Length: 297
Picture 1 (spheres, rainbow, N blue to C red):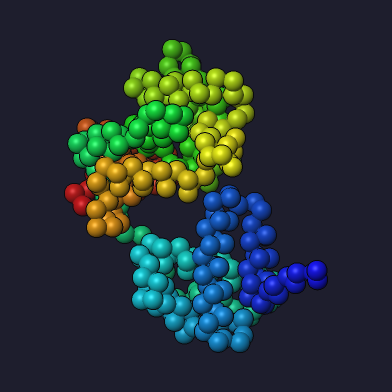
Picture 2 (picture 1 turned 30 degrees about the vertical axis):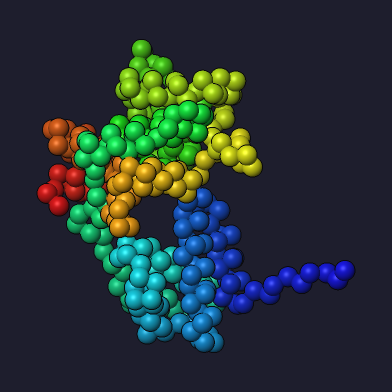
């Protein structure tokens, strides 16, 4: 049999690949987001019949309309795609491949003044948790990470990065050390409430021989067992339970996995926690972002 020919990359695909490879000092999540966003750009670029890698401002505006009208992406998603494109063209310009960055003159949507994801009520939380069947390792695992999000507002990436050894007892308190978004170390911790501790301990009975450096939340699939759960995997599991609980009717995009974290923060805010404490507890970068949980929107 003859050799299988490798697909020849276009110039734009080659440069995207080089750009992604240059992000070795960025987090895996950032690199992954840029790669997915620029894959869409490369697809659009090829179909647009543009024959020069140096785009004009009008070309970027066309791409922006494509994302909004054709792909029907939400405002925040369009901002993410355009931010990735801006960083890509910064890279091209800095390396002398293009003479200027055409994206610098195209407005990127600003962040909204309220959260785009809905929160859920206490009754809906109960419906969600009751939809998780705790009969095997996977069910107990999903129940445990769901309780962690709802009680401490953990990000998916914090769950993904957590190891068995990060769960500790300190001065009679159970805590989990976490590595947040954009962080290189596990320099924050969240206190584990008793009901969450029970959920974690029930799950860890299936992991009694696990080592401290093994992932706290491990994939339970036949092909991926032993590997760390991914952010995508966690979102898929949460979405499954949201649907089972009847909370994602009519493709309600505002109810999403992020709703669990938002619900936890909103509950703390409603119960009188000061904004600066909420900011610290939920590892929120800016105080004004934490203040959104106190708005009526």
